Image (cartoon, rainbow, N blue to C red; front, top):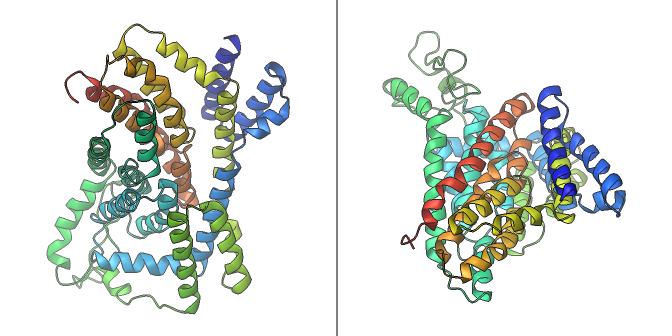
Length: 453
């Protein structure tokens, strides 16, 4: 027990040092993990290395390298231009476009890391071009992807339903799917209102009489906080007093499409299709594609390696390594067993959801769900609590926290933010993710209440 309390204390100390001293939290977590394995475990430093998330490392490096090439050779800029024109440059619509695209694809069975890995680079660039807060765009992509997590054909949905079936319980796949969609759509509305979406919409209403005859292609300068810069003002809507939007006079021609862009786009689409249909690891696919592109067109790929977000790689992999170590030494199970020892079914359900939210904020949602559902089996089998309600509560609690910068998909979005926006976006994701950790276990208890399901 003392070891588990010490391990939790080291993690809390790492967060404190990172916040007060500005040290990369991943580096602190690796040092803390090294101290833990040397002082209190018998496995030695190899136990720490065994917990290192090699798959996440390759995913972050591969995706940021591939899309770094696409950014350098102009492919992303071209896709952003096409998407902008598809909604007539209306910045207020673009966050919902990203939300919808991510949600539909995950609902069709694609894993959220794959979808976010493909949508985030384009979405974050689109946001930058149109003055949309990177926090707004990133969180809409993340929660859009979460919408499809528990589709009956998605891996997470199948995991929950099959686990219940193997235990002799009756799952309700459509109720799980619908509840998760509803919860994330409501979160999308909150995100849109809170992170500057309404300000974009209001600003467009003000400029609509001026721009009604021409598509707006530069959007509204909402600033990094979604409030139109320091004073919340709208970007200039006229050029030289002509009444024509400044952006419309300088950005009305579509960007050119050449052979390099075509090859890059084709390779990215092939990577996405193989990852979604073939269930092949996206990280190694993206890295392989990046190497092929550099070999085929070295001049147009020059400088792409510098776009790999190494600071984010260190941050995420360090923290996830430490949490993996906690799982290996049994700290996660220790906390789960403590929750199951309570006499109240509702209190036990709440604690299991809270454990899922906290741990999943730093680790694989699929892995945590696979652990939590069996932990809940003893009192689910007793009939004291709704099986469907508990499945929904655990599923939502363990996945809406993926908006933290330490989760796989949160890390992918953060790594695609502009370097100048990265710290600001990181703090926003951290604050929002902490809010999800605190609120999801409480709000999802409504699904567990007797008589609801």
